[in-house]
Image 1: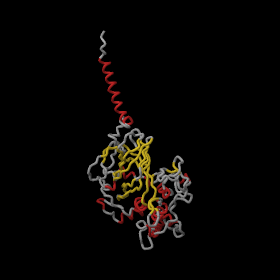
Image 2 (image 1 turned 60 degrees about the vertical axis):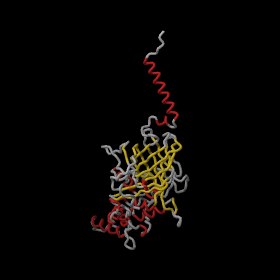
Image 3 (image 1 turned 135 degrees about the vertical axis):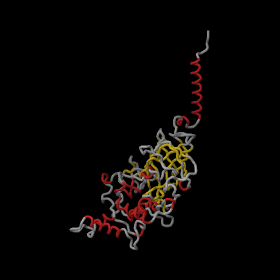
Image 4 (image 1 turned 30 degrees about the vertical axis):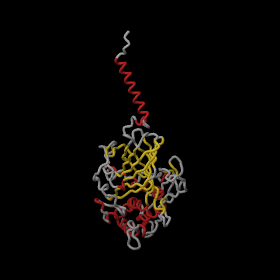
Length: 403
């Protein structure tokens, strides 16, 4: 009797033995089974480019009742509230607008002739700059300090302890409402002015891993976009070579959520062809990791109040191509123009930032110098290539000036 097995049966048995051996080897490597079909993790590394970023803020003021005293006003609106600022009988709309503009210029000038957007400390607090006084508001963000203080907000799920004092400052400003103009700064990111890269190293399991190394970089290359102007996954990027635009920390992954240990980080921003730093002290990530390698969650920390004022309102330290300080006319004109268009006053913003700062007290005065700031981010898989490059964007070539 011929007991020789058919060739196809012997092939199947051989394949089965090979598959079982491969599976045993796979299971012997920590986390390997969890990464077997994860193309965006290679040799324990995963890289991402931020594809969307915006301030994590609260609800529409008109719908939530967070601003019962009304919204913040600009200088012309303030001038129009005075007796002298009312439109006179027979005065044309054009003449009235010119008169309000002149009155606003007076209000925006300090006692020594200072431009109050460039020198907000020379002015007085603005009683018409409205901030969110309630704390029972549900806002985006995470708990940064592990405490639930009276100044903290509620999370979207009702949890206490959300540190987001930047929202308290801007929640009654028209331009920082959900559809406001001031929260669209990622447009400059998508046009190539700046970018943020994140790299994970030592990844064993994308669902649960007690220790991963995490790097933050400013991007030295413009973000790659599809013909539909959408960020492309798996594009290659080089991180900025300047040390200040690199930060490293550690983190852990639990149930697919990456949480990192706080670290000081520096990113970039662009406003009206001027480039500024976007520092974030004690920066941390809390993001969910999807099966296809997308991050979704929060980048949060504390922004020094003077840097936040420059970045969002005053542009005092904006620099140009090559790193030189932008002309005063551009900085001043941009700040005053933004105050009019976006509906605020520079002095109001500066004092509100200082009044609501909630971290990093000055050793001498004890006054807090930084304000809790939360960004909602999304990131997609990318490749990070370490090499010396000349940044292709004026912002990226600014070499960190603008403080």
